[in-house]
Every structure is written in C-alpha cells, then in structure tokens.
Image (cartoon, rainbow, N blue to C red; front, side, top):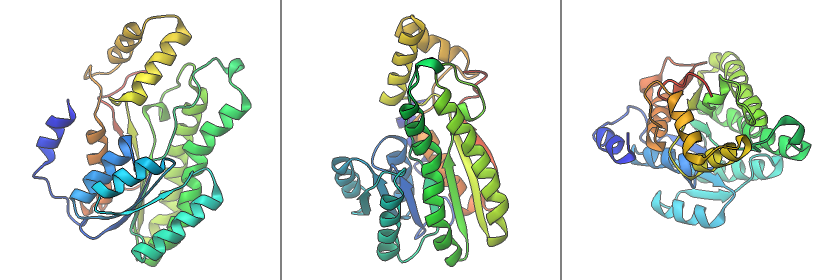
Length: 270
C-alpha cells in the first residue's frame, strides 16, 4: 500500500487526546521519524525532535510549525541530556517519548564484523533508547503519566542472517519495553514497542543491496526473497508505522502497555 493511499485513509481520522500533548521524537527529521512527527503534528501535538543532521532538522522544523529541533546523537549521554534540558525549557514538560533513532548496522558474517561496528549499532539502537528514557521518565512522571513507544523491528522476533548486531539490539528493545512497562505502569506510564517490517524507502533499499552482495545474488532476487516471506506479499509504508505509533500514544491506546505491535504484513521469516 502506498503512502498516498494510507494518507487518504487516515486524512479524516482524529485520534483522541493528542492535541496539545508534548512529544519527543528521536531521529525525527527524516524517514520514519519524520513521518511520525508529521502525523503527530497534524493531530495537534507539540513536538520536539532531535537528529544528527542539522540541515534535515531545519527543513523538518519549518514543516512542523517551527518545533524545537536540535542536533543530538542518542548514543552520547551529554548530547541527550542537553536535548532534554532544551525540551524542558521549551515545552515546559513532557507527555510522551518516541524512541525512534536507529541504524541498520553492518551486513556481514559475524567473523567479519568489527567490534566498533557492533558497538555503534547496539549503542544507537538500544543504549540510545535507555539514555533517552532515563531523561524522559522523570518529566513524564511529573506530568502525571503518559506514554513511551520504542522502535523495534521484525528483527526483534526473528534471527537475521548477516545482521546479528541489529537483530541483537532489536531483541533487546522488547526486553527494555516489557521491563519498563512493569516498572512504570504504577506511575501511569504506558510503554509499548512498534516492530516495523520491510519499510519502503532508501534505507531498506540499502539493506537489500548489501545483503544481496553478501549472499552473492542480485538485488531483484533478494527483494523477491524478502517479499516471499511476508504473508501480504508487500512492504509497509512509513505512514503505516507512523499511524501505529500515534495510536499507541493517543487515548485510543489507553489500556495498551508492554505490547510489541508488528507493523509488517505478517513477516514469517527474515
């Protein structure tokens, strides 16, 4: 399903409780993060986004009503702390966190993966979610409760050949999500994970290209292999993922916590 079709389907949808809600979206200046930020902005949320690209932040902020947009690498504790200090000053508090930042990591056999590449992937995809959560949670508690959505992956449920750092980190996201849901639930903070599948766009094209090269087959063969393992036989769109995140943050998801929602057309294997 294309983004245009999904947008048409969602254009009249108004999710309850999002207007005025203060939300942080990490890596919110491009890709899935920007799609999430757009949906939340259209629903009336007040946004703060971070990203590593200053140029992308300027463009995204202008599109999102000149929202707070700040450079920050989520794997860097000092940068994360500075960003949330700015969020507190600008928004006066926080109601929800979308832990979206992540990277694809290396595509290689385990013996060919460098420790540096392993650490970088895990630091961004998993440790970054912890660093943001530890800053966001006191602010959400002070607001009387709220929501957190952690970005997992279909690789949170399936082993992924030649993508061991990424899959290991994304399995960790589910553990983090379920642990925080139990810890924070009594304080009225809901914590869920969204697990996108094969998402249309440049990042997935790069993954397919690299994995095809690692296995010595063509791009077209590898793409066909991916689609063959999806029950619906199609990729999902960034907008599909964004609407699922918005639902979980909204009052429509008020009793959902500790869940891992697959937005993937039912991936049977990776």
